[in-house]
Image 1 (tube, rainbow over the protein chains, first blue to last red):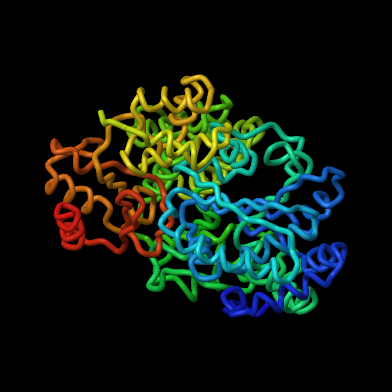
Image 2 (cartoon, each protein chain N blue to C red):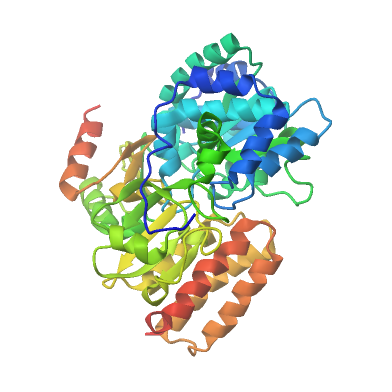
Length: 386
Length: 154
């Protein structure tokens, strides 16, 4: 399907009858469910973009009898707040997605890992869960969902760190492999999906993979919820069809003076004005978990970079050296360059360090610090130096 | 320092005594007393039959499980980019002037602690803060003064 600019859609918050969708899924075979999700082309909405159907297929293939569905509601990426909105307005769809996942992979238990910052939502979420449990027992599902709460650690959004945290340990990422589909929470096969991914599954079952496929592009199917903030007259949450360029996005959300858009949060990529037209928002261009921050020409990109590096230096779990030391050194490094304590060519050394972190860090945190660092330094070098 | 009474026992009865119960138990204590004392961590270790070092090691990993004394109301001001662009500095200034403390400190009546925190997920309604678990958004200096006053009267 040919993309023609920015297209607002309204599917994810659309009211559905949970009984109808869940009964429909209940009457499908597990293979049929997985096949639908595979055909929809749905990729993980948390940011990493692993095909959801494949994750389910691998977990379903495991011989273990004890398996888990984990919902990652540890939305911590700076600039992302769409999962909070989904939890607030469409929790029953998230529970529905978990239940469908549970049937497809053969799990009887689901766990929602909710970030501590969203604890205020818990009473409401538990009330909704109670009536949801009643509903699925009526239909015939054997599935129970419970909550685990985070306590203010960004790294716990990383899947294996999240499992450690559920199990009562420090949220330090594990070595991979084994992947969660083989050995996840409690070392059992686990399908861990983002809130939005699970909500989207309900939409796919409701409308069918073919209908869902009408939206988006070959590499980025469907629509996605974007969290828009920064220098924009209309900050908030917007569901958009995937495949638009940054320019099309800026035309809609910019304040007329946008000089850069940070796509994907602190661990994402900075797109400067000159690349707006040629950069597609999606897996063929810049992937995003939904965080879109606009900066106008009054903003110092040094301050933006410094803010991100300060964030990473604090949130690095400290387990592996490239990330622990790397985050601190990048932060100190740009401060030194700014002060003129070192030559501006020192930025080249820092770029090499960011590359090393990408290769040598144990998890996605350390591996992606270089994304923002490199794209900001490359495109706004003079702002970093002077 | 605070006296914990039967709280650890109540929480372990409720959440169980397995290793995975550690987080909910610690969260339950912090919900009530804002931070963890050495004594309470030792008591948790005994109840769960694990080393106190394990309890401290886990607690110290999580920013919301404070092991240093905190006031009854912990004010966490988001310092990540959107909030920082939209007036976080003014909010901090207002709070510091009003409470006569700096970031990182607790008022002498032990009612408020003021700290900065990373992104709390309200970037479209910046600047935002948490007071204990409650978020307050789209703040202005006037608005924050009113909010703090309401906590003073609680």
